[in-house]
Length: 325
Ligand code: NDP
Image (cartoon, rainbow, N blue to C red; front, side):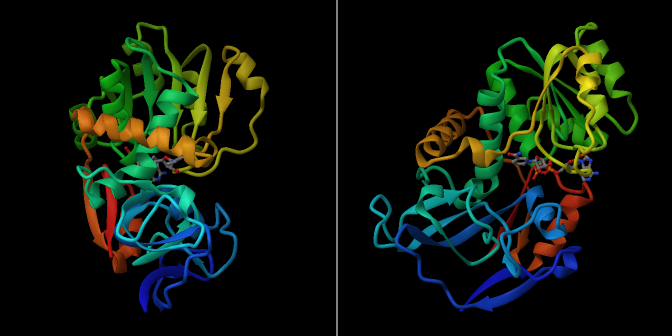
């Protein structure tokens, strides 16, 4: 038997149950991974609460982890039992000692990358890769705005921007988070609990505002984010930490400067094994260069997944959070 977290209805963290389950045999194109570390992500709270719908209930949770291949399907040719692997996409169910998923979601881990680092980095780092290198290719010298800069995705973005010579202005909710974002490479920070974000962006950019704003907060920051964009700038709305953006009036984009908006998701970028590998190669190369360091702010036992989600949802975490089976 193996332990896993599941939920049978949507709700608060009390719907998460730790259960014993029979290890599943992988299908022909699948692999069974013995997780050594599991990544906690805000998206996990969306599936739990019902903002996002899992394919069925009861459902497993989580889509990021790292460990060893324990069993391979008959048609899998590129992975073997014992290989060290990591994943940040694929079916729900990573909050578990064992996770069965299609082999196309797995990348082989370089020896220098530990399981904990990989679990803290795969989903979040691949997200920063596509946001900074594909959705909008920020260039050295440009000034960009990134919300939640001291979070899991945010601290990786700060470091990646610094490596590119991009001046990242990060929003945060406290002086401690501001210091952390700065230490990780943010060029400037705005503490939105005491400062006017739009006013500060105007000051920091000499009135020019930003060519791109990365907004994972959603409902609460939508309007403000548009107001921080230069004419014909791009709003990358990639999350809903405060709730989903709804009821958008497209005319607002014209009034505020012929703006662009995109609502991207990692799955559409890491859409096949080739794209995933290319993105992971770039991520691991940045790590190997020393320009990126993994900031694991919190570690919890798998059994304490509910506590971990509570901390994430109530803004108590910084950097990445991992669960240990
Ligand atoms: P974080 O560690 O960034 O945690 C969320 C942070 O958002 C908080 O720490 C807090 O920072 C800020 N925040 C602002 N308003 C709220 C609010 N009302 N409730 C809670 N937090 C709030 O989480 P992750 O790194 O896991 O994810 C960051 C975001 O990126 C999420 O929205 C997630 O859904 C999104 N995402 C999107 C992906 C995609 O492909 N589209 C992939 C991966 C992540 P502060 O205290 O400084 O305000």
